[in-house]
Amino acid sequence: MDPIVVTLAFLAVVILLLFFGPPLKFMQWASKGVLKVIVGALFIFFANVFGSMFGLHIPINLFTSVIAGFLGIFGVGALVAIHVFIL
Image (cartoon, rainbow, N blue to C red):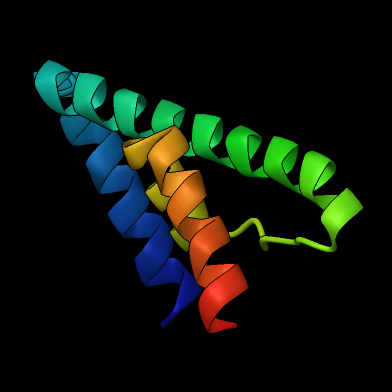
């Protein structure tokens, strides 16, 4: 895609947000989602730290972080079970 088109589209969105304001419900929803993904990545990091003694390593990417973030400890347990029994 042409960089000029992308820049103009970005500027149009910024101008619209300046005139009408940001949608607050969407911003709250998006911030909660991003926070859960970050917490999920931290859960996986600590699982990797403690699992390294047993040869366990779960890759930290967007998919695994979303699973661990939205499902919590049970999500990390599911990822560990998938790693042990399937992979």
